[in-house]
Length: 616
Image (cartoon, rainbow, N blue to C red):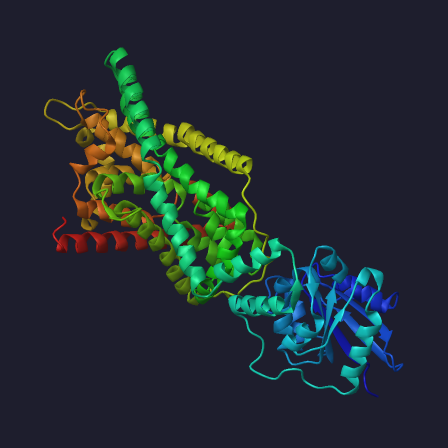
Protein backbone atom coordinates (compact mmCIF):
# COMPACT_ATOMS: atom_id res chain seq x y z
CA UNK A 1 0.00 0.00 0.00
CA UNK A 2 1.43 3.33 -1.05
CA UNK A 3 1.81 5.88 1.76
CA UNK A 4 -0.28 9.03 1.73
CA UNK A 5 1.59 11.77 -0.19
CA UNK A 6 3.38 14.26 2.06
CA UNK A 7 3.45 17.99 1.27
CA UNK A 8 5.80 20.23 3.28
CA UNK A 9 4.52 23.75 3.96
CA UNK A 10 7.59 26.00 4.19
CA UNK A 11 8.47 29.69 4.21
CA UNK A 12 9.85 32.60 6.14
CA UNK A 13 8.55 33.56 9.58
CA UNK A 14 5.54 35.91 9.41
CA UNK A 15 4.56 34.80 5.90
CA UNK A 16 1.17 33.48 7.08
CA UNK A 17 2.34 29.89 6.65
CA UNK A 18 0.60 28.47 9.73
CA UNK A 19 -2.61 30.32 8.90
CA UNK A 20 -2.63 28.71 5.44
CA UNK A 21 -1.84 25.29 6.93
CA UNK A 22 -4.74 25.65 9.37
CA UNK A 23 -7.10 26.78 6.61
CA UNK A 24 -6.21 23.74 4.48
CA UNK A 25 -6.35 21.08 7.23
CA UNK A 26 -8.92 22.48 9.65
CA UNK A 27 -9.27 20.39 12.81
CA UNK A 28 -7.60 17.35 11.24
CA UNK A 29 -4.23 18.03 12.86
CA UNK A 30 -1.86 16.24 15.18
CA UNK A 31 0.76 18.06 17.25
CA UNK A 32 3.84 16.45 18.74
CA UNK A 33 7.62 16.85 18.85
CA UNK A 34 10.19 15.80 16.31
CA UNK A 35 12.33 12.90 17.60
CA UNK A 36 15.30 14.09 19.58
CA UNK A 37 14.46 17.82 19.61
CA UNK A 38 12.00 20.05 21.44
CA UNK A 39 10.53 21.45 18.22
CA UNK A 40 6.81 21.07 17.63
CA UNK A 41 5.63 18.95 14.71
CA UNK A 42 2.29 20.00 13.16
CA UNK A 43 0.79 17.47 10.73
CA UNK A 44 -2.68 17.59 9.18
CA UNK A 45 -4.71 15.81 6.52
CA UNK A 46 -6.92 17.07 3.74
CA UNK A 47 -8.41 15.77 0.51
CA UNK A 48 -7.30 16.50 -3.04
CA UNK A 49 -9.86 17.42 -5.72
CA UNK A 50 -9.75 13.82 -7.04
CA UNK A 51 -10.72 12.52 -3.58
CA UNK A 52 -7.32 11.17 -2.61
CA UNK A 53 -5.98 12.01 0.87
CA UNK A 54 -2.85 14.11 1.32
CA UNK A 55 -0.80 14.86 4.41
CA UNK A 56 0.62 18.32 5.13
CA UNK A 57 3.44 19.09 7.56
CA UNK A 58 3.83 22.69 8.75
CA UNK A 59 7.59 23.28 8.98
CA UNK A 60 9.07 25.88 11.37
CA UNK A 61 9.70 29.25 9.74
CA UNK A 62 13.22 29.71 8.39
CA UNK A 63 15.30 32.25 6.49
CA UNK A 64 17.46 29.74 4.65
CA UNK A 65 18.92 26.24 4.51
CA UNK A 66 21.88 27.24 6.70
CA UNK A 67 20.29 26.76 10.13
CA UNK A 68 20.99 29.16 12.95
CA UNK A 69 18.49 27.65 15.43
CA UNK A 70 17.01 24.22 16.26
CA UNK A 71 13.80 25.20 14.43
CA UNK A 72 15.68 26.01 11.22
CA UNK A 73 17.73 22.82 11.56
CA UNK A 74 14.54 20.75 11.64
CA UNK A 75 13.21 22.54 8.55
CA UNK A 76 16.41 21.85 6.63
CA UNK A 77 16.58 18.20 7.71
CA UNK A 78 12.96 17.50 6.74
CA UNK A 79 13.40 19.13 3.33
CA UNK A 80 16.60 17.19 2.66
CA UNK A 81 15.25 13.88 4.01
CA UNK A 82 17.68 13.84 6.96
CA UNK A 83 15.22 14.24 9.83
CA UNK A 84 14.96 11.08 11.93
CA UNK A 85 11.49 9.56 11.72
CA UNK A 86 10.43 11.85 8.85
CA UNK A 87 10.17 10.88 5.19
CA UNK A 88 11.18 13.11 2.30
CA UNK A 89 8.23 15.29 1.16
CA UNK A 90 6.61 14.46 -2.16
CA UNK A 91 5.96 18.14 -2.90
CA UNK A 92 6.47 21.61 -1.46
CA UNK A 93 4.00 24.39 -0.73
CA UNK A 94 6.07 27.56 -0.32
CA UNK A 95 4.32 30.49 1.35
CA UNK A 96 5.62 34.01 0.67
CA UNK A 97 4.41 37.43 1.80
CA UNK A 98 3.26 39.33 -1.29
CA UNK A 99 4.10 42.71 0.29
CA UNK A 100 7.65 41.61 1.18
CA UNK A 101 8.36 39.60 -1.93
CA UNK A 102 12.07 40.29 -2.51
CA UNK A 103 13.00 39.24 1.03
CA UNK A 104 10.82 36.10 1.08
CA UNK A 105 11.91 34.96 -2.37
CA UNK A 106 15.46 34.37 -1.07
CA UNK A 107 14.36 31.26 0.81
CA UNK A 108 11.84 30.34 -1.89
CA UNK A 109 14.62 30.21 -4.48
CA UNK A 110 16.62 27.82 -2.30
CA UNK A 111 13.57 25.60 -1.86
CA UNK A 112 12.71 25.56 -5.56
CA UNK A 113 16.30 24.55 -6.36
CA UNK A 114 15.80 21.38 -4.32
CA UNK A 115 14.02 20.06 -7.41
CA UNK A 116 10.81 18.83 -5.74
CA UNK A 117 7.34 19.46 -7.24
CA UNK A 118 6.49 22.91 -5.92
CA UNK A 119 3.61 25.36 -5.63
CA UNK A 120 4.10 28.94 -4.38
CA UNK A 121 1.32 30.60 -2.36
CA UNK A 122 1.46 34.37 -2.83
CA UNK A 123 -0.11 35.12 0.54
CA UNK A 124 -1.58 38.33 2.00
CA UNK A 125 -2.18 39.63 -1.51
CA UNK A 126 -5.01 41.80 -0.18
CA UNK A 127 -2.65 43.75 2.09
CA UNK A 128 -0.19 44.22 -0.77
CA UNK A 129 -2.93 45.69 -3.00
CA UNK A 130 -4.11 47.90 -0.17
CA UNK A 131 -0.59 49.33 0.08
CA UNK A 132 -0.49 50.14 -3.65
CA UNK A 133 1.50 47.09 -4.78
CA UNK A 134 0.21 45.26 -7.88
CA UNK A 135 1.92 42.06 -9.01
CA UNK A 136 1.94 40.12 -12.30
CA UNK A 137 1.39 36.53 -11.18
CA UNK A 138 2.02 35.18 -14.68
CA UNK A 139 5.42 36.89 -14.85
CA UNK A 140 6.29 35.59 -11.36
CA UNK A 141 5.43 32.04 -12.47
CA UNK A 142 7.64 32.41 -15.52
CA UNK A 143 10.58 33.70 -13.47
CA UNK A 144 10.30 31.01 -10.78
CA UNK A 145 9.34 28.13 -13.08
CA UNK A 146 6.62 26.91 -10.71
CA UNK A 147 2.87 27.57 -10.31
CA UNK A 148 2.00 30.66 -8.23
CA UNK A 149 -1.40 31.09 -6.56
CA UNK A 150 -2.71 34.28 -4.94
CA UNK A 151 -4.01 33.56 -1.43
CA UNK A 152 -5.48 35.27 1.62
CA UNK A 153 -5.13 32.53 4.23
CA UNK A 154 -7.12 34.23 7.00
CA UNK A 155 -10.11 34.56 4.59
CA UNK A 156 -9.58 31.12 2.97
CA UNK A 157 -9.12 32.66 -0.47
CA UNK A 158 -7.14 30.67 -3.04
CA UNK A 159 -7.39 27.31 -1.22
CA UNK A 160 -9.18 25.51 -4.06
CA UNK A 161 -6.56 26.71 -6.56
CA UNK A 162 -3.73 25.47 -4.33
CA UNK A 163 -5.30 22.03 -3.95
CA UNK A 164 -5.83 21.81 -7.72
CA UNK A 165 -2.17 22.58 -8.37
CA UNK A 166 -1.00 20.08 -5.72
CA UNK A 167 -3.31 17.45 -7.21
CA UNK A 168 -1.74 17.94 -10.62
CA UNK A 169 1.78 17.84 -9.15
CA UNK A 170 1.14 14.62 -7.22
CA UNK A 171 -0.62 12.76 -10.04
CA UNK A 172 2.31 13.24 -12.40
CA UNK A 173 5.35 14.00 -10.20
CA UNK A 174 8.15 15.81 -11.97
CA UNK A 175 11.22 17.65 -10.85
CA UNK A 176 10.87 21.37 -11.23
CA UNK A 177 14.50 22.23 -11.69
CA UNK A 178 17.47 19.90 -11.65
CA UNK A 179 20.87 21.47 -11.18
CA UNK A 180 23.67 22.12 -8.74
CA UNK A 181 21.34 22.50 -5.76
CA UNK A 182 20.32 25.49 -3.67
CA UNK A 183 22.63 28.48 -3.40
CA UNK A 184 23.95 29.46 0.03
CA UNK A 185 25.33 32.84 -1.02
CA UNK A 186 23.06 35.44 0.65
CA UNK A 187 24.11 38.27 -1.65
CA UNK A 188 23.53 36.21 -4.80
CA UNK A 189 20.16 35.08 -3.47
CA UNK A 190 19.23 38.65 -2.57
CA UNK A 191 20.14 39.94 -6.03
CA UNK A 192 18.20 37.19 -7.81
CA UNK A 193 15.20 37.62 -5.50
CA UNK A 194 15.14 41.36 -6.14
CA UNK A 195 15.43 40.87 -9.90
CA UNK A 196 12.43 38.51 -9.89
CA UNK A 197 10.40 40.76 -7.59
CA UNK A 198 11.08 43.81 -9.75
CA UNK A 199 10.12 41.89 -12.89
CA UNK A 200 6.78 40.88 -11.33
CA UNK A 201 5.82 44.36 -10.09
CA UNK A 202 3.27 46.16 -12.25
CA UNK A 203 2.74 49.13 -9.98
CA UNK A 204 4.14 50.22 -6.60
CA UNK A 205 4.46 53.28 -4.38
CA UNK A 206 7.39 55.71 -4.88
CA UNK A 207 8.83 54.73 -1.48
CA UNK A 208 9.11 51.07 -2.51
CA UNK A 209 10.74 52.06 -5.81
CA UNK A 210 13.35 54.17 -4.02
CA UNK A 211 14.06 51.33 -1.58
CA UNK A 212 14.64 48.85 -4.39
CA UNK A 213 16.91 51.22 -6.29
CA UNK A 214 18.97 51.95 -3.19
CA UNK A 215 19.29 48.25 -2.39
CA UNK A 216 20.28 47.54 -5.97
CA UNK A 217 23.23 49.90 -5.47
CA UNK A 218 24.13 49.34 -1.80
CA UNK A 219 23.94 45.53 -2.01
CA UNK A 220 25.67 45.26 -5.37
CA UNK A 221 28.56 42.72 -5.21
CA UNK A 222 31.08 45.31 -6.39
CA UNK A 223 29.57 48.70 -5.60
CA UNK A 224 28.28 47.62 -2.18
CA UNK A 225 31.67 46.85 -0.57
CA UNK A 226 33.20 49.96 -2.17
CA UNK A 227 30.43 52.16 -0.73
CA UNK A 228 30.81 50.53 2.70
CA UNK A 229 34.57 51.15 2.64
CA UNK A 230 33.96 54.77 1.60
CA UNK A 231 31.50 55.28 4.46
CA UNK A 232 33.99 53.91 6.98
CA UNK A 233 36.79 55.99 5.46
CA UNK A 234 34.65 59.14 5.73
CA UNK A 235 33.87 58.28 9.33
CA UNK A 236 37.53 58.12 10.34
CA UNK A 237 38.41 61.25 8.38
CA UNK A 238 35.63 63.03 10.25
CA UNK A 239 37.00 61.87 13.61
CA UNK A 240 39.99 64.14 12.95
CA UNK A 241 38.74 66.92 10.71
CA UNK A 242 35.38 67.60 12.40
CA UNK A 243 36.75 67.41 15.93
CA UNK A 244 39.59 69.92 15.58
CA UNK A 245 37.73 73.00 16.86
CA UNK A 246 35.79 71.40 19.77
CA UNK A 247 38.76 69.25 20.81
CA UNK A 248 41.16 72.21 20.82
CA UNK A 249 38.66 74.30 22.79
CA UNK A 250 38.15 71.52 25.34
CA UNK A 251 41.89 70.99 25.67
CA UNK A 252 42.51 74.72 26.16
CA UNK A 253 39.76 74.92 28.79
CA UNK A 254 41.16 71.92 30.66
CA UNK A 255 44.70 73.31 30.63
CA UNK A 256 43.53 76.77 31.71
CA UNK A 257 41.43 75.43 34.56
CA UNK A 258 44.23 73.19 35.76
CA UNK A 259 46.71 76.06 35.53
CA UNK A 260 44.37 78.38 37.43
CA UNK A 261 43.89 75.86 40.22
CA UNK A 262 47.61 75.19 40.31
CA UNK A 263 48.35 78.94 40.64
CA UNK A 264 45.98 79.29 43.61
CA UNK A 265 47.00 76.22 45.61
CA UNK A 266 50.26 76.06 47.54
CA UNK A 267 52.87 73.57 46.41
CA UNK A 268 52.38 70.22 48.06
CA UNK A 269 50.87 66.77 47.77
CA UNK A 270 47.26 67.96 47.28
CA UNK A 271 48.21 70.40 44.52
CA UNK A 272 50.30 67.72 42.78
CA UNK A 273 47.41 65.25 42.95
CA UNK A 274 45.04 67.75 41.30
CA UNK A 275 47.44 69.22 38.74
CA UNK A 276 49.61 66.20 37.90
CA UNK A 277 47.02 63.52 38.56
CA UNK A 278 43.52 64.76 37.79
CA UNK A 279 44.14 67.47 35.18
CA UNK A 280 47.25 66.06 33.51
CA UNK A 281 45.90 62.47 33.64
CA UNK A 282 42.11 62.44 33.50
CA UNK A 283 42.04 65.75 31.61
CA UNK A 284 44.22 64.23 28.90
CA UNK A 285 41.46 61.64 28.32
CA UNK A 286 38.43 63.95 28.50
CA UNK A 287 39.73 66.11 25.65
CA UNK A 288 39.01 63.21 23.28
CA UNK A 289 35.26 63.34 23.94
CA UNK A 290 34.53 65.13 20.60
CA UNK A 291 36.25 62.37 18.60
CA UNK A 292 34.28 59.68 20.42
CA UNK A 293 30.97 61.49 19.88
CA UNK A 294 31.68 61.90 16.15
CA UNK A 295 32.36 58.16 15.88
CA UNK A 296 29.07 57.36 17.60
CA UNK A 297 27.21 59.94 15.53
CA UNK A 298 28.06 57.90 12.44
CA UNK A 299 27.16 54.60 14.10
CA UNK A 300 23.78 55.90 15.33
CA UNK A 301 22.89 57.41 11.96
CA UNK A 302 23.84 54.23 10.08
CA UNK A 303 21.80 52.08 12.47
CA UNK A 304 18.66 54.23 12.45
CA UNK A 305 18.75 54.75 8.66
CA UNK A 306 18.54 50.99 7.97
CA UNK A 307 22.00 50.77 6.38
CA UNK A 308 23.68 48.78 9.16
CA UNK A 309 21.82 45.54 8.40
CA UNK A 310 22.73 45.93 4.73
CA UNK A 311 26.37 46.26 5.78
CA UNK A 312 25.90 42.91 7.57
CA UNK A 313 24.84 41.29 4.29
CA UNK A 314 27.83 42.80 2.49
CA UNK A 315 30.23 41.47 5.14
CA UNK A 316 28.57 38.07 5.48
CA UNK A 317 30.44 36.37 2.62
CA UNK A 318 33.83 37.51 3.91
CA UNK A 319 32.97 36.49 7.46
CA UNK A 320 31.74 33.04 6.46
CA UNK A 321 35.06 32.42 4.66
CA UNK A 322 36.80 33.33 7.92
CA UNK A 323 34.88 30.68 9.84
CA UNK A 324 32.52 33.15 11.51
CA UNK A 325 28.76 32.86 11.61
CA UNK A 326 26.93 35.52 9.63
CA UNK A 327 25.15 36.44 12.86
CA UNK A 328 28.53 37.45 14.29
CA UNK A 329 28.46 40.73 12.36
CA UNK A 330 26.20 42.61 14.77
CA UNK A 331 28.15 41.57 17.93
CA UNK A 332 31.44 42.47 16.23
CA UNK A 333 29.99 45.78 15.10
CA UNK A 334 28.87 46.47 18.66
CA UNK A 335 32.44 45.83 19.76
CA UNK A 336 33.52 48.99 17.91
CA UNK A 337 31.75 50.79 20.75
CA UNK A 338 32.87 48.43 23.52
CA UNK A 339 33.78 44.75 23.56
CA UNK A 340 31.62 44.12 26.66
CA UNK A 341 28.19 44.60 24.99
CA UNK A 342 29.62 43.03 21.83
CA UNK A 343 30.48 39.82 23.70
CA UNK A 344 27.08 39.83 25.43
CA UNK A 345 25.38 40.21 22.02
CA UNK A 346 26.84 36.86 20.92
CA UNK A 347 23.94 35.24 22.78
CA UNK A 348 22.00 35.52 19.51
CA UNK A 349 24.38 32.97 17.94
CA UNK A 350 22.93 29.50 18.52
CA UNK A 351 25.92 27.36 17.57
CA UNK A 352 28.15 27.26 20.69
CA UNK A 353 31.41 26.99 18.72
CA UNK A 354 30.52 29.87 16.42
CA UNK A 355 29.59 31.90 19.49
CA UNK A 356 32.87 31.08 21.23
CA UNK A 357 34.90 32.06 18.15
CA UNK A 358 33.07 35.39 18.01
CA UNK A 359 33.73 36.03 21.71
CA UNK A 360 37.43 35.32 21.31
CA UNK A 361 37.90 37.70 18.35
CA UNK A 362 35.56 40.50 19.53
CA UNK A 363 38.38 42.26 21.48
CA UNK A 364 40.24 42.75 18.18
CA UNK A 365 37.54 45.15 17.02
CA UNK A 366 38.84 48.66 17.73
CA UNK A 367 36.67 49.82 20.64
CA UNK A 368 36.10 53.49 21.42
CA UNK A 369 38.44 53.22 24.42
CA UNK A 370 41.36 52.86 22.00
CA UNK A 371 40.39 56.06 20.20
CA UNK A 372 42.12 58.43 22.69
CA UNK A 373 45.34 56.41 22.36
CA UNK A 374 45.20 56.39 18.56
CA UNK A 375 44.31 60.07 18.37
CA UNK A 376 47.07 61.10 20.77
CA UNK A 377 49.87 59.20 19.00
CA UNK A 378 48.68 60.12 15.50
CA UNK A 379 48.31 63.77 16.49
CA UNK A 380 51.82 63.83 18.00
CA UNK A 381 53.72 61.97 15.27
CA UNK A 382 51.73 61.97 12.03
CA UNK A 383 51.72 65.36 10.27
CA UNK A 384 48.35 66.94 9.53
CA UNK A 385 49.05 66.77 5.81
CA UNK A 386 46.37 66.84 3.14
CA UNK A 387 46.66 64.02 0.61
CA UNK A 388 43.70 65.16 -1.51
CA UNK A 389 40.71 67.46 -1.06
CA UNK A 390 38.95 66.27 2.09
CA UNK A 391 41.48 63.48 2.72
CA UNK A 392 44.10 63.90 5.43
CA UNK A 393 47.06 61.69 6.27
CA UNK A 394 46.00 61.41 9.92
CA UNK A 395 42.58 60.09 8.95
CA UNK A 396 44.16 57.58 6.56
CA UNK A 397 46.37 56.26 9.38
CA UNK A 398 43.34 55.98 11.68
CA UNK A 399 41.42 54.10 8.97
CA UNK A 400 44.40 51.77 8.56
CA UNK A 401 44.44 50.99 12.28
CA UNK A 402 40.76 50.06 12.24
CA UNK A 403 41.27 47.90 9.14
CA UNK A 404 44.19 46.19 10.88
CA UNK A 405 41.93 45.24 13.76
CA UNK A 406 39.24 43.92 11.39
CA UNK A 407 41.63 41.82 9.31
CA UNK A 408 43.36 40.66 12.48
CA UNK A 409 40.00 39.43 13.78
CA UNK A 410 39.24 37.62 10.52
CA UNK A 411 42.66 35.92 10.45
CA UNK A 412 42.32 34.95 14.12
CA UNK A 413 38.86 33.52 13.39
CA UNK A 414 40.25 31.42 10.52
CA UNK A 415 42.95 29.97 12.77
CA UNK A 416 40.63 29.44 15.74
CA UNK A 417 37.90 27.79 13.66
CA UNK A 418 40.44 25.28 12.34
CA UNK A 419 42.25 24.62 15.62
CA UNK A 420 41.04 25.47 19.12
CA UNK A 421 37.41 26.10 18.15
CA UNK A 422 36.15 24.17 15.15
CA UNK A 423 32.93 26.02 14.31
CA UNK A 424 30.61 26.01 11.32
CA UNK A 425 30.71 29.62 10.16
CA UNK A 426 27.40 29.41 8.28
CA UNK A 427 25.65 32.27 6.50
CA UNK A 428 22.47 33.85 7.82
CA UNK A 429 19.22 35.38 6.69
CA UNK A 430 17.35 38.29 8.22
CA UNK A 431 14.76 40.85 7.18
CA UNK A 432 16.01 44.09 5.64
CA UNK A 433 14.45 47.07 7.45
CA UNK A 434 12.98 49.99 5.56
CA UNK A 435 15.13 53.01 4.84
CA UNK A 436 14.23 56.01 6.95
CA UNK A 437 15.62 59.37 7.93
CA UNK A 438 17.19 59.23 11.41
CA UNK A 439 15.23 61.16 14.02
CA UNK A 440 17.33 64.00 15.36
CA UNK A 441 15.95 63.50 18.87
CA UNK A 442 16.90 59.80 18.88
CA UNK A 443 20.44 60.55 17.66
CA UNK A 444 20.80 63.35 20.23
CA UNK A 445 19.67 61.08 23.06
CA UNK A 446 22.10 58.37 21.90
CA UNK A 447 25.00 60.85 21.84
CA UNK A 448 24.04 62.21 25.26
CA UNK A 449 23.98 58.70 26.72
CA UNK A 450 27.35 57.91 25.17
CA UNK A 451 28.85 61.14 26.53
CA UNK A 452 27.53 60.35 30.02
CA UNK A 453 28.97 56.83 29.85
CA UNK A 454 32.36 58.21 28.83
CA UNK A 455 32.37 60.94 31.48
CA UNK A 456 31.19 58.50 34.16
CA UNK A 457 34.01 56.17 33.14
CA UNK A 458 36.44 59.09 33.31
CA UNK A 459 35.12 60.05 36.74
CA UNK A 460 35.31 56.55 38.20
CA UNK A 461 37.63 53.93 36.67
CA UNK A 462 40.02 56.34 34.97
CA UNK A 463 40.08 58.81 37.90
CA UNK A 464 40.68 56.17 40.56
CA UNK A 465 43.32 54.36 38.48
CA UNK A 466 45.05 57.65 37.68
CA UNK A 467 45.17 58.71 41.35
CA UNK A 468 46.63 55.32 42.31
CA UNK A 469 49.23 55.68 39.57
CA UNK A 470 49.95 59.28 40.68
CA UNK A 471 50.59 58.02 44.21
CA UNK A 472 52.87 55.25 43.00
CA UNK A 473 54.68 57.68 40.68
CA UNK A 474 55.03 60.42 43.33
CA UNK A 475 56.71 58.50 46.13
CA UNK A 476 59.42 58.42 47.17
CA UNK A 477 60.26 61.96 46.12
CA UNK A 478 63.12 62.48 43.68
CA UNK A 479 66.27 64.19 44.91
CA UNK A 480 68.27 66.88 43.11
CA UNK A 481 69.19 65.80 39.57
CA UNK A 482 66.92 62.76 39.68
CA UNK A 483 63.85 62.05 37.53
CA UNK A 484 60.71 61.32 39.49
CA UNK A 485 59.79 58.47 37.13
CA UNK A 486 63.10 56.75 37.88
CA UNK A 487 62.99 56.74 41.69
CA UNK A 488 59.26 56.20 42.33
CA UNK A 489 57.51 52.92 43.12
CA UNK A 490 55.87 53.03 39.69
CA UNK A 491 59.29 53.55 38.14
CA UNK A 492 60.66 50.41 39.78
CA UNK A 493 57.61 48.40 38.63
CA UNK A 494 58.13 49.79 35.12
CA UNK A 495 61.76 48.62 35.20
CA UNK A 496 60.55 45.02 35.46
CA UNK A 497 58.00 45.45 32.66
CA UNK A 498 60.58 47.25 30.51
CA UNK A 499 62.80 44.19 30.56
CA UNK A 500 60.06 42.30 28.69
CA UNK A 501 59.02 45.03 26.23
CA UNK A 502 62.36 46.69 25.46
CA UNK A 503 63.06 44.31 22.52
CA UNK A 504 59.96 45.65 20.72
CA UNK A 505 61.08 49.27 21.07
CA UNK A 506 59.03 50.34 24.11
CA UNK A 507 60.61 52.88 26.44
CA UNK A 508 60.16 53.08 30.19
CA UNK A 509 57.30 55.59 29.84
CA UNK A 510 55.27 53.06 27.88
CA UNK A 511 56.19 50.32 30.33
CA UNK A 512 54.70 52.39 33.13
CA UNK A 513 51.45 52.87 31.19
CA UNK A 514 50.83 49.25 30.15
CA UNK A 515 49.82 47.84 33.53
CA UNK A 516 47.21 50.47 34.54
CA UNK A 517 45.82 50.35 30.97
CA UNK A 518 44.42 46.93 31.83
CA UNK A 519 41.81 48.72 33.95
CA UNK A 520 40.65 50.75 30.92
CA UNK A 521 42.36 51.42 27.62
CA UNK A 522 42.10 55.19 28.02
CA UNK A 523 44.15 54.99 31.22
CA UNK A 524 47.24 54.56 29.02
CA UNK A 525 46.82 58.21 28.00
CA UNK A 526 46.13 59.29 31.57
CA UNK A 527 49.16 57.36 32.85
CA UNK A 528 51.54 58.91 30.32
CA UNK A 529 50.10 62.36 31.04
CA UNK A 530 50.57 61.95 34.80
CA UNK A 531 54.14 60.64 34.55
CA UNK A 532 55.22 63.40 32.15
CA UNK A 533 53.59 66.07 34.30
CA UNK A 534 55.48 64.85 37.37
CA UNK A 535 58.76 64.80 35.45
CA UNK A 536 58.23 68.28 33.97
CA UNK A 537 59.10 71.52 35.65
CA UNK A 538 56.40 73.55 37.35
CA UNK A 539 56.18 75.96 34.41
CA UNK A 540 55.71 73.19 31.86
CA UNK A 541 53.60 70.74 33.83
CA UNK A 542 50.46 71.48 31.83
CA UNK A 543 51.80 71.50 28.30
CA UNK A 544 49.74 69.48 25.86
CA UNK A 545 50.57 65.80 25.98
CA UNK A 546 51.23 65.76 22.24
CA UNK A 547 53.97 68.36 22.72
CA UNK A 548 55.65 66.29 25.42
CA UNK A 549 55.45 63.05 23.44
CA UNK A 550 56.91 64.39 20.21
CA UNK A 551 60.16 65.26 21.94
CA UNK A 552 60.62 62.03 23.89
CA UNK A 553 59.64 59.19 21.54
CA UNK A 554 61.04 58.11 18.20
CA UNK A 555 58.61 57.55 15.34
CA UNK A 556 59.48 53.84 15.37
CA UNK A 557 58.46 53.59 19.04
CA UNK A 558 55.22 55.48 18.39
CA UNK A 559 54.29 53.18 15.51
CA UNK A 560 55.09 50.11 17.62
CA UNK A 561 52.85 51.47 20.38
CA UNK A 562 49.98 51.85 17.90
CA UNK A 563 50.52 48.30 16.63
CA UNK A 564 50.48 47.02 20.20
CA UNK A 565 47.11 48.61 20.90
CA UNK A 566 45.56 47.12 17.77
CA UNK A 567 45.99 43.63 19.26
CA UNK A 568 46.63 44.19 22.98
CA UNK A 569 44.69 42.19 25.60
CA UNK A 570 41.52 43.98 26.57
CA UNK A 571 40.52 45.68 29.81
CA UNK A 572 39.50 43.88 32.99
CA UNK A 573 35.79 44.38 32.22
CA UNK A 574 36.15 42.47 28.93
CA UNK A 575 38.01 39.65 30.64
CA UNK A 576 35.32 39.47 33.33
CA UNK A 577 32.41 39.32 30.87
CA UNK A 578 34.26 36.67 28.82
CA UNK A 579 34.61 34.57 31.96
CA UNK A 580 30.89 34.97 32.66
CA UNK A 581 29.79 34.15 29.11
CA UNK A 582 32.07 31.07 28.83
CA UNK A 583 31.41 29.83 32.40
CA UNK A 584 35.03 29.50 33.42
CA UNK A 585 38.59 30.85 33.27
CA UNK A 586 39.89 28.57 30.50
CA UNK A 587 38.85 30.73 27.54
CA UNK A 588 39.53 34.16 29.12
CA UNK A 589 43.09 33.03 29.92
CA UNK A 590 43.44 31.66 26.38
CA UNK A 591 42.10 34.94 24.94
CA UNK A 592 44.49 37.14 26.95
CA UNK A 593 47.43 34.88 26.08
CA UNK A 594 46.93 34.81 22.32
CA UNK A 595 46.18 38.55 22.20
CA UNK A 596 49.37 39.28 24.14
CA UNK A 597 51.41 37.17 21.72
CA UNK A 598 49.79 38.89 18.71
CA UNK A 599 50.39 42.36 20.19
CA UNK A 600 54.02 41.57 21.00
CA UNK A 601 54.74 40.21 17.52
CA UNK A 602 52.94 43.09 15.77
CA UNK A 603 54.69 45.75 17.84
CA UNK A 604 58.10 44.14 17.39
CA UNK A 605 57.68 43.70 13.64
CA UNK A 606 56.52 47.31 13.32
CA UNK A 607 59.39 48.69 15.39
CA UNK A 608 62.19 46.83 13.66
CA UNK A 609 60.74 47.52 10.21
CA UNK A 610 60.57 51.23 11.05
CA UNK A 611 64.14 51.18 12.37
CA UNK A 612 65.29 49.49 9.17
CA UNK A 613 63.81 52.44 7.25
CA UNK A 614 65.67 54.91 9.45
CA UNK A 615 62.71 55.98 11.61
CA UNK A 616 64.20 54.85 14.93
